[in-house]
Length: 119
Image 1 (tube, rainbow, N blue to C red):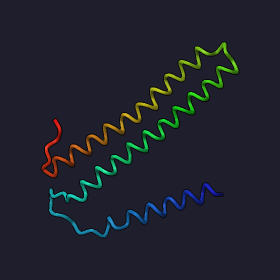
Image 2: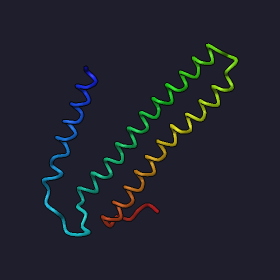
Image 3: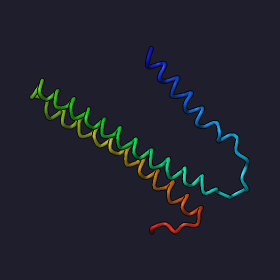
């Protein structure tokens, strides 16, 4: 029951926070307001922070489960280790993908403002 309550609460909060977006006037074609760029960069930073935090939590749970499995059945350590490494690689790749998307957003928005990228 509480899960449904928190899910509905999160959706209502998201809808409430996103509603001012629809009230803005249309900008000229090709023009990007500086506030949009600032929000895009801030959003990319938060996305990276969330991905890193939840990726670290997922890696911790995976290592914990692997250690518990090896403790229960030491003979299966090789199979568990292989599955663990594959899982850790896939978890870390998701965090790296978020980093790439954040960098793309940053450099595209920095170019829209006329800021020189660090390249």
